[in-house]
Amino acid sequence: MVLSRFWTCMAAALVIAIIAVRPAPAETKPDIAALEAGPIAVLSAPFTSFSRTGGSETRFGKLDFRGGLVLSAPELPNFGGWSGIAVDADAKGFVAVSDSGVWMTGKITYDGVHPQSVTDVRMGPIFAQDGQPLRRTRDRDAEAVALVSGTITNGSLLVAFEQNSRIARYDMSRDGLSPARSFLEKPKTARSMRRNNGFEAMTILKGGPFKGAAIAMSERLYDSARNHTGWIWTGTAAQEFHLTNIGDYDVTDLASLDDGTLFVLERRFRWLEGIKMRLRRVSASELQPGLTADGEILIEANLENQIDNMEGLAVSRGSSGETIITMISDDNFNHFLQRTLLLQFALKDAKTAKTRP
Image (cartoon, rainbow, N blue to C red; front, top):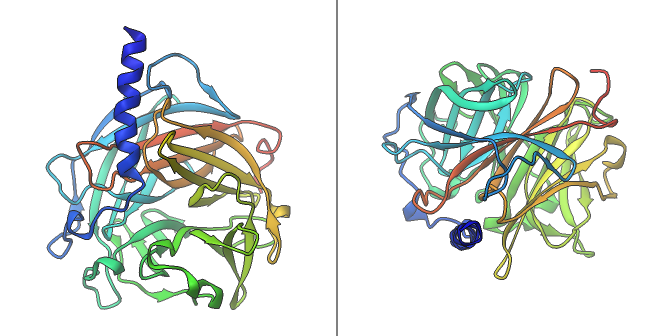
């Protein structure tokens, strides 16, 4: 019976994987022209096993799984496609962006250290500079979000867009995102990115030699050695760097710890293995313009685990100095075959148990 259930899960997961790596056609993404910002009801189904077949194991790679939530809002067609997430320092307040041009804010509640639900959720359209919702599908493809300063309810954000590739700055309040205030200058070497391989991953470096600098990567832009390409906005210009390509994973998001450590979320699809997820850690000293960083693999997960199309990443410090890692998945608006998952892990080792800067 257990074996039968396992292969049923695997078969269903393979269908999800096939869909997950293919961008949703424009017509399947809901229109946001009439969407108004306001509170929404989101259902949260918590789970504590990272294995699809259950079990009490919590250690996966170098991470401890703290739990996850299946998020849904069946009555809301604009709920889904969540591709980027940022969290407050306490890992409670969050903001997420969707590749349909929508933002969502809320609070994560906990049962001890285990995610229990999301509350106080609001959703609304991302605005252009003229204060109107983004009109064209290629303009609405938001893939990453990062908190520049302040908090989720009173701060400043950057949002990275993939198809019409750009990084825009917004003000943030309890009511949501303001119209776009300004844009980062696009690096010349980024102009070779194809429409579906623009800015996929982005964050603000919270420490290290480039503290306060924006950093972004393409999902799949290779150098001559087939390594991944990214940029660090230092001063008035963006400087190029590279990340070793290990196994042809695509880069889906970035997040930074307060000591300058960079975390890289990656995804890979193969017909014979389905979808995989990987998280790498790159030290602040290894991240240098003009050089290629390797990083350290912290976890690799596959269809035996509770993953979907994991695209959004955020990190914060726990009360004991551990790193709290939060991920969110993009369901491509295939609500019947995919899920919006919010996952949390803890990283406890000598590299993370440092005094707060």
